[in-house]
Length: 177
Length: 462
Image (cartoon, rainbow over all chains, first blue to last red):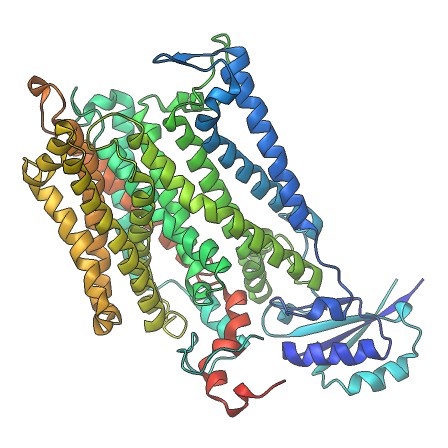
């Protein structure tokens, strides 16, 4: 099915936000916003849910904590307990204080790297991936709203009239398959 | 957009637009490098290569080429290690701790400070590795299954904690830095005209497109990574201090070490940031973004951490007497009046007296004075580690074993070499990477830009 994508370009983040608010109040579905930096407050307007990456980081951290605990218990208590200067480490509890630094570092290591990898995968940003922003200026000082006709019941002409009220600077339409 | 009080000095001077910020940061990367860059790079490279030569000689011959002896088994090697790790701390403090405290002035300096952190930790990591003498068995510090039976590394040893602390610190700093760099690489990619640089920056930018959801995730990742990196700032140098504090050598066996080392690390790190930024802002014409106010903020951090370090020195001295332990008291008396008195008093002058001058507003806002003090502080902080390590070891419990440490030319060559290598990395960074978090800086333009703050609309409601 062919579809038409409309790219509406603004030269200010606040103007885009006001425009988006106007469009959404008229029932328009905005499918994407491209910007050179984070526009604070745009997410609820265009219906983007907050990311769950924070929860993932916590889970990765828990994994690191568990691995470090289990690992050190195995190395130092089960497999080869060493008697250092009359201080034997035959139980985990006796030695837990000495294990805290590594436990902490390993928790942070797993949480940070796990989160970073998940972030890159979820964003589909990996070395060699092609850029998908509609205009190279959106990484400089321009802000673009993307609207798909198939996602909206409004006629194109009516939509154009509505867009005219949002003081955009450029309008681009593309047919896609 | 967040507004702030009018009396607060603007963070971005002049009448900048979003596009100006892109231009100002990208131009030095896109233009030809100035002649000065080649000269500095050449000098740094020669010094760095000399250091590499010394390291190769050391690896081929053995650690005996250092000026160590049976009494002083640790000297310049660990001094340099602690010095470089300490320098690294400012970058993470700026990018992580100041992010959590919502300090907007960090945005102009966090990128280069973090780069400095990473390169400094590279240099630091080199010392324990070459100190092993057999670099190729460096992986023995990891708990890997091995052919020696159930022989594991000792998790009760602070030296092993250090392995985990430094490697976590380095890798998390790299990730934090790179995640911030991705959107800025995308900006350079979209401006690049030459096919080669377009290709390079599109690989580096990972195909970043700046979708709203990407930014939503970006902000969460920055916040959580800052939260994770903040305890790292404190833990890494605490663990470095445990290398000494958990031993029973008088002068090392001190409970004040962890906080004192952390304060010292931030102190020396900020001094190094000042040294680098004062040159960089001028060479790359970034005076509008990194100006007197930023320098002043950093000088205040230097003053506060310098005072903490000074208090720690005096506390140490007091406790050595108050403890009633004569060995402990002698260790400190010997530092101040023994054969290494000059090192002790250089440390005291550079680290305790000089930052106190920052109480004067005129001085802490003077760029030339700041540059001078930043170098003094780094010399002082090197002496601090030298004093702690060498003066504590050189006179031990057995007077017949007392000795002095004289550095060999390899000691000096390796140390000077790491400074050269550090500048090689930093100059490459300044040449090819966006030295300012340009897209982040755009977010504070309307709130803290001079032209916006001075406009009559600034205090009206939207």
